[in-house]
Every structure is written in structure tokens, then in C-alpha cells.
Length: 618
Ligand code: ADP
Ligand code: MG
Image (cartoon, rainbow, N blue to C red; front, side):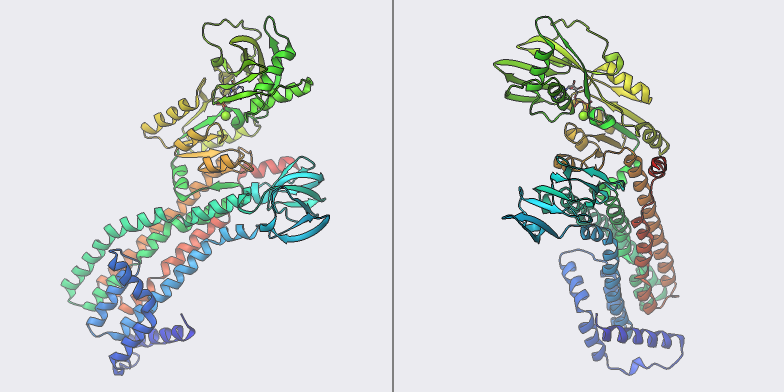
């Protein structure tokens, strides 16, 4: 809209309002109608063309009603009023664009944090190039205070890295040779040489930005709402307009009824708040993939938890190795570690570590097979080795109860060699320290049932569940976990599941909201979950629930506000108390109200738990 258009519209508006108030005679009556028509066509064609296009496709846009109002004004020869309606249609379009732009600010702030250039080593010299030109495998040099441009592994140097961009955690971490570092994090003190593993959109940061943009662009829900809404709302407004006309025989009051309702505000009320929250949350290490998950979280009443890697730190230690008759400790450990060589499971890592501590030589497994929720199977030196839960032992076989691991809350792994039990390993894992407080907080937030679902054995599960005061189910296969989720859903519950995103991906997907823990650096987890927590920190879970509740409170307020505004406007217009020109002017105001209300969500308050923890650290 040009400056000329703005001035012309504003002056005309004042003149018409002045005429209505009787301040001066009818100036505008002296202007020929052809002039007004020209103004309407010249100034209004972008919005009018859109309305025509939409109407042809049998759609109703936020401007449809206003266009009908404008036509009504023209029909009774009120050309200046028609021009003013068009003027405010353009203003409204502007306000809408501005509003959307503001809501996207959080997303923009996020993209602005992306690294732009990288210093790579090429032919012995350091050259600065755009990030997009870095290739995987190249060595990147990062100096103190600089942004790390790629996801990669530190090959030399030492630095404290501020990972707040990814994890939201302001405490920097130490990174030395072998450490994994992420693009868009900052090397505060010290320099690093990094072997690039992932670049640009493939980095964890790149994925986060892409998913937040997708969540933002995903207007599916909004569109559906707007369609359903016009289905109900439009007939009501038309009905009121018809009544107004029949009772008053005043076409201008009728036109005002059509013009005053701001149908687009209803469509904005929900997405604006959600976009603001999603953007702000992403900067705090919470990646929420869509507004509908915020809504589901705000109504969730059942929380299901995975054990290994979720409630526990996921870095278990092998505490005992018990060989059975005919096998040695080292044999059992070497078999197990060789079979586990390529498994991603935290327990596999523990077994490999233990073998390393015993300086054992590992065999190369053939035909490796991981059975989710049970264990692994592989050929090692022509022997079939199976490692895993009691399910790898067939029922007929007799395993003497050696020791009392399970009562101590340890996980027992059975090692089977060519179908014959060879020994047992006991692994203990540590509960994440912030879990009890976070679970108590969840209960305070209204989650009525919290249940532990695990593939581990009954006694280990019981010991952990008891210490946390939770319900539990043990010996579950991945498909059993899905069945539990479905069981709750069938009873009408809104189910949230927290898991590690790798083993639990199917159950996470089945839940109304699946939350993956510690997703930074794990593509699988980021893809699998509806919400990905970028750092392994349970305080983020109640935080997420609070964000969801706040967002829905703002949404409700937006809807109530718009509803009341429309109701008052509609009543005044129907009673003939609101002139058409004022009606047009009033209709873009609620957008601004919704905007300022939703913008509060851009500044998310620090959670009380996080703040307390920070104080403890000092
Ligand atoms: P949770 O449900 O507690 O996260 P999982 O479903 O990942 O546990 O695994 C369940 C059980 O299956 C474990 O307690 C372990 O006994 C066995 N298991 C699964 N994967 C492996 C593996 N790679 N090596 C050894 N045992 C495994
Ligand atoms: Mg698990």
C-alpha cells in the first residue's frame, strides 16, 4: 500500500466520519461515482481479486464478508463508504502480515543463530569459506569466541563450549579430543580442530530449525479450523444481517453487520500463540513438532516412562560376571562383548567397556542380529552367541540363581553359547538425580497416572518403581509397550510417553505425545518423537507441560477476546448504532490484541526447578 493510498484513505475516513457527525455538509456527494469506482478498482484489486478467486473455488476468506458489505454499500449508492471498506481491507491485510511476521520472530531468531562461515584446512592453509561449502571429513578450525560451524568430532585442542543454542543449558561443557560438538554452539575459551561429520541442514541445529519452520508452516490445523468455523459462523452472520435488514430496512446497517465481524481473528487466535511458544521453546532445548502436541500435552493425564536410558543415566556398568560350569569369566565376557560389538543399546556399551577393562580380544561377529527388547544374537568364532534378558534362555533350561542381583535392582544379562547357558552379567545403572522431583512436579501438574514400562525383569523394575512410588510393568517387548499405550487411549486417556527414541520409537509414535530424551546428535530420536528434548534433563518434562498449559491459556484468552469483540460489534451494527465506515475501521483491531497477547509467550519464564538447581550449583 503506497503512502498516497494511506493518506487518501485516512483523509477520506475522517471526512466521512465528519459528515456522519454533521460537522460539515456532504462533500463527498459531489464527487462523481465513476471516480469512486476507479479508486476501488485501483486500490482494492489485490484483495478483491483474491476474494473472487476464492469464491470461484467455493472458499470463504477473511475478506469475503467485507466484500459483500462493500457491494451492499455500492448498491445503495454509498460510494465513499465502499471505498473506506476497501481501504480497511488493505489495512487489515497489512496488520495480518505484520502479525504473522512478529509471531515468526522466534523462528527468525533461531535461524539467525546459524553459523555462516567456517575456517577449513585445505592444502595446509586455513581458508574461510561459507558453511555450505564445507565437506564431511574436512578439518575445521575454531578460535576462542567463535561459533562451531559443523557437527563433528574434536581432533585436537580443548575448549569450554556453550551449547545453549542446542540444549538451552547455559552451563558450558568441556570439549577435548574425541568429544562430539554441534554446529551453532560456541567455543568460549580455547580453540578446537574439528573433523566435520555433518554440515548445514544435516546438523542437529539444521534439523531443529527445519522442524520448527515446518511446525510453523504447517497450517493444516488452522485451515481446517477456519473452514469448519466459516461453516458455522458464516450462516449465523448472514442470518443476523438478514434479520437486521428485515427489521430495519436499512442496507447500511446490514452492510455494517457483515463488515464488523473479523473472521480472520478467529483463525489467528490459535496459531499465533502456538508459533510463539514453539519458537521460544526451541531455543530452550525443547523441540515441539506442532501445535497439536501442545494442545494434547495440556490435557494429558497418563505419563508412561521407559527405564533404560530414560529414567536411568543410560550408561550402565557391568558389576559382576558369573561364568557357569565349563566357562571362564574372560570367555563369558569376550563372547558377550563380541556379540554386542555393533549394538547401539546402552547395555551393549557397558559390556564392551567391561571387556576393554579386562583387555580382552574381541572376535568379529557374523550374522549379527538385534532383537529389540530382548537382546542380540551373532556368530562369534563359529559359535552362536546370544546375550540378553531371560527371554534368551528357553524355559526348559535350568539356570541356577547365582547371586541376588535383581533384588539389588541390577539388570541381569544371560549369555548363551550354542544354546547352552554360559554365564550371567549383572549391570547397574544410576537413576537420573532430577527424576524424583520432576515426577512429583508432574503429579502437581495434574498427571494422574505415571507408569514405568520396561523390558527389564520383574524384580529390577519393582525395586526402581518402588523407590519412586510408581506403578510398573516389566518384561515388556516393544510391541507390548505399544499395546499399553493403546489400552490407555482406548479408555479415553491422553497418553504422553517418554522414551529414548531409539528402542522406544514405535511406542513414542503411538502415544498422543511421544517425548524423546537427549535427542541432540541422534537423528533417529529427533525424527521419531513428537517432542525432542535436546538435553538429557528431566526438568524439561514438567517445563514442557507448563509451556503447553500457558500456551493453551493464551489461546483461550484470544478466542474469548475475539468472540466478545465480535459479539459487541455485531450487536451494535445490527442495532444501527455502528456506521459502516467505523465498522470497517474496527475490524482489524482484534488482530493486534491477539498479537500482543500471544507475544507474551515469546518470553518463557525459567522453570522454578531449573532456577533452584542453578542456585545449588553456585
Ligand atoms: P527398557 O524397556 O528398560 O528401556 P529395553 O527394551 O531396551 O529396556 O531392553 C529390555 C531388556 O532386554 C534389557 O533389560 C536387557 O535385558 C535386554 N536387552 C535388550 N537389548 C540388549 C542388548 N543389546 N544386549 C543385552 N541385553 C539387551
Ligand atoms: Mg529403553
